[in-house]
Length: 157
Length: 157
DNA sequence: TAATAGTTGACTATTTTGCTAGGTTAAGTA
DNA sequence: TACTTAACCTAGCAAAATAGTCAACTATTA
Image (cartoon, rainbow over all chains, first blue to last red; front, side, top):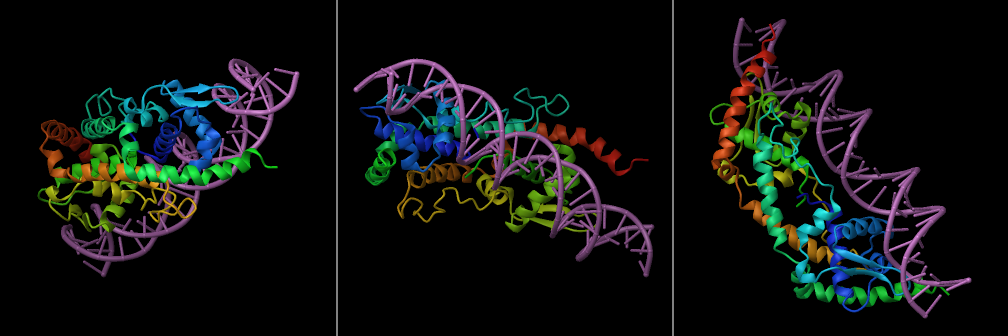
């Protein structure tokens, strides 16, 4: 379990999606505008999330992305794992033979820590995060604020 | 709280140090040999650990590094934080004004998660890790295995 | 059929990571 | 005092990860 900005972007975007896709699909353009993440970068992240079976793309007008499962069934660890490389976290690649055919400190220790963090994040769902009041408030405000910008973007005339 | 290989190297090295510096200081050369981390990279990591007040360098023959505090008073979160950049984790740099002078989702959400992970790692000390049987076994074996290599390195004749 | 929106791939710039090479400085030792 | 040891410091570099652009293509729907 690696924790980098990439995972943070993915979680933020998924949270935005969970919040706004209650009824209709949400376009990446909207998420990009609200969360100030570049559209193309979002496309890359969502390609991975789609392959991981977490979101579903709906093409054509009125299309966008939807969650494949309920927000309460999507946990943070899975989102982060989806956008990160398969990650041979230790040099030994889980083979426990990095040092002269023997397990290294890194393997025994870090893998253990990593698993515990993963378990921790597995216990937190998108729904859990949405329930936090603060987040709802902020999302509401962003929705309102970004709406105008999105309208201008779509209908520049 | 970012979790990358850099932090893993630092924790591994500190664990090695905690295990071997019971009596005399430990040289980075020894740690480099045992943990197969490059000496110069270790020097960079320990420069940060020293500035963070976690280790103390002893110069001259018989010198090396010692822990400034007891292993039970050094936690994993501090080690990782010491080697990573100050980390303006969110774009808003904690100022909560990244998006049009308002807090962003990233700020409220990710910072919260990050804090929880940090708290979790703060609760784990070097001593805790040393107590794990597996780690002790591996370290013991590494000590034994590396000793010969170190001897050869020091006295090539 | 035209507009919308997802899908894909190639390509670029920047930052971080991990490491090398070379020094200087302080502290013991012959 | 000269020598050795090891910390300490600096600059630079290659590979990888990060973050993003651009352009073409495909499926859907109005």
